[in-house]
Length: 423
Image 1 (tube, one colour):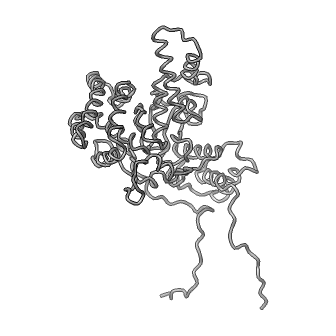
Image 2: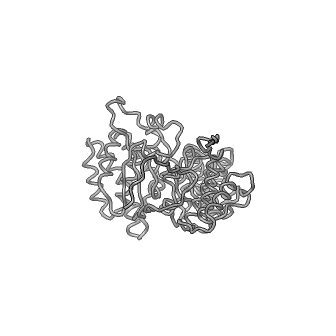
Image 3: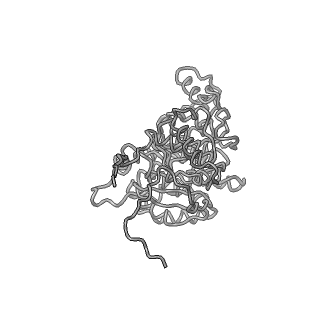
């Protein structure tokens, strides 16, 4: 008997643009159609959609194409167009549902409209806090379109300068000054830069909130992080990379409780020196009047504390306290406070590698060394941790779901051996 050997390829080569092909494949998996401009013959998304449509034709879809699934696919298209990595292991439709908010944390207006509506200032958009990192869990927050347009391409320092310029413009306007000169013109441009692009203008407080949100996901030196006010509390599932800001968040959350006086007294007893307790009490005393006023008027304590952080006296007292405390003692205090659970809040400490897993940072080790420059020797230094903050009543994680086989899953291998005897 003659046998003919066939020269078959040993391995199947993936599509040159595997990311775009998989986006199209997942659209077909959920029974959705990508945007029309991406369905051309030569586009990877169109090719993946046609391949998936041929596979899933006539089959039931294991995943329902709900609102968060559509948002998840649209966000992946945005990341693909920008050339930014997208962590599929952590950013899921369930994660997008957990970070969803009703109001913009920057402009404090109700979010409305579809996420694809880019012509409405109040339309919700998922944004990266660190614009140099990937679309990954802990680096995403939901903002309004106007706030998202305002901080495009701006780093933390740029946002701080715009906030200070907007403060100068508001102070000049309140004093009745005409505001002539280059400084006044620059302040006016910073305060109303969003209005020039067709969006709603941002005030100084909104610029400070943008700077705070950007800094939460950006590794910063301790001296620079100590000068930033906590103008916005971290949204749900956002990871705080700087120890100084993690301490800010944990102390502010304690002030937002009804028994804040007892909790802050307990924190003062944890401080190692009497001078530190004095600086700490002075900082609490600067915040207490705003807090008591908010409680008397029935205001939201979290919003009142964010506004109180913008006070010059509060920032000055905080800077004195943190500089006197030092970064090593600050990290130790963060660990002790994170171990104490607060009602309605879940706080978790992660190692640096775990906290930035999937972020695709250029030099994560170098950034960690810049933030934690006080370590004496790498051999004796303890593992670095970062605070991961969760909002009230986090949604339960989605259970395992059965999915249809995709071309990216490993193929089952045939096993050689005797078959089991049939009975």
